Amino acid sequence: MRRRRFVAGTVGTLGGLTLGSSPAPARSPSPPSSSDPDPDPARRTAVVPPRAEGGPLLRWDGITWREAAFPGRGEPDVRFTSVAVGPDRQVWVCGTRGGTLRLLHGKGRRWRWLEPLPVESANLYRVVVRRPGEVWVSGEQSNGGGWSGLVARWDGAWTVLPAIAGLRLGIADVHAAGPDDVWAVGTEAGIGGPPGRPGNPALAHWDGKAWARLEAGFTLGSLSGIAGDARGRAAWISGWNFRDQSSSTYLRRDGDAWTVVRGPAGAATAPYLNDVAHVPGTTGFWSVGMTSPSPYPPTEAYTERLLL
Image 1 (tube, rainbow, N blue to C red):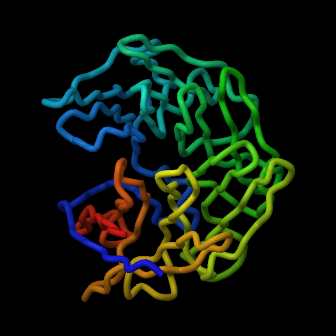
Image 2 (tube, helix red, strand yellow; image 1 turned 45 degrees about the vertical axis):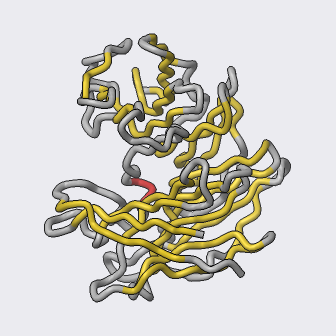
Image 3 (cartoon, rainbow, N blue to C red; image 1 turned 30 degrees about the vertical axis):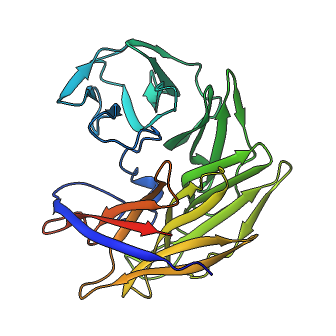
């Protein structure tokens, strides 16, 4: 087994930022992430979606943040939840407009809304780019008495995979190595238990025919992000283990199985990791989150870098 080394650190005090402190973290969208392969942050172009309805899109040009113009800008029913940038620097933003779930696609300074997602009573929480022109989204959809996991693909038209069965299941992130190799992670709130009871981590795999639910290696907590390695194969999952908060929690792909891996131990309780991403051109990964599951000060933004 390869030796792993973690480098951890805080970024700064946060206030009012929700990263999933509820029993079903998928219902509080993750912070925006970018799949831009450029490892130089000074040259990286990113778009940050707003947290409130009718807010702006902000674009980082290497020097400052600038507001981007897009169709529907300023409309009160426009809301964005996640953003991804592909290797061709095309931008994909998921959200709602006119009461329907949509993708906003940006190419250069040109923006257009794509066809609505053909699913009713649903929410989207993440959009990820697999390759130019192909993106995947994840979230949840109503099943009449709760909600089931939602995963769909856009490649010029929508393909909605069968719902992932669950009592109150939200999919926080998705990784597609191919149409018959898709991984989804999230949290199932379930029913019963004391007030504030955390949910259960949810891990599912699509083989092109059906979803299979797998054990996460712990029972109370959440799975929040998934990242592929340099070959595009699902490799690491970020999570939060409610029963053992002595250090951060990950799942590592080992052949066809997933094993629990712990981050660096610290004096405080374990951070709440919200996402994990591969560092292009390396074998390393970054994870991000907060020093506490609660979004209230003195919570700080937190990062860990996994060096393989």
